[in-house]
Image (cartoon, each protein chain N blue to C red):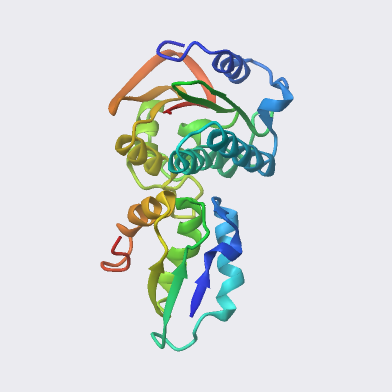
Length: 196
Length: 96
């Protein structure tokens, strides 16, 4: 868990996504279905604006999280390893808001290999997902969500950590870092840190 | 013809919703190619994502039934999403 914020929501999400068998996360942090995920997104946005965050920042965070979490549902429907849905937790502090999103799905490599069988590794798959316009739902040709996330974060002051398989991708103060880790993670795990 | 996007919701953020919105509007689209403009009015929309827009706007462009115009695109997610997707659209479709 190198380079991750030392927050309880991060630890709980990490343990949930890494567990060998699926267990229910805390109910208030679990979205089994997309409708609940969207409802929680709306609630988070309201909380942020009530806490004095800039409205545009709240809209933007809503859009970014929609794309990351939407991918979990779009690409894993009917194919979850054990537990459907996403872990979705946030913490609002004076300096910023941290959001954790995780799923126990197929992961980026398996998803993208359906449309591009030649992808050799988690690392290559992650780069394709964030850098190239490709969809993992063949024959649907679109799939720009993570590319939009990257471009938006690079324009605005948001930090991101993302892991799938053994590949990690991080944006910190607009600096990108692609790495390979020893810890294999099924599904996806993302942390967004938005300044206030 | 003006399509008030707000009628599909203030948060337009999933592929499935975009697809459904397009299917709902399709019967009302002009039949004669290029006979009129279609104005997409984003007044009241709070969140627009590429997932929704790619399922709603890109097919509208591909149908080539009308020239698209965009109004009230000041919301940050609307402008960023349109600018992002416009790179894959025919030149001049969106001039944000």
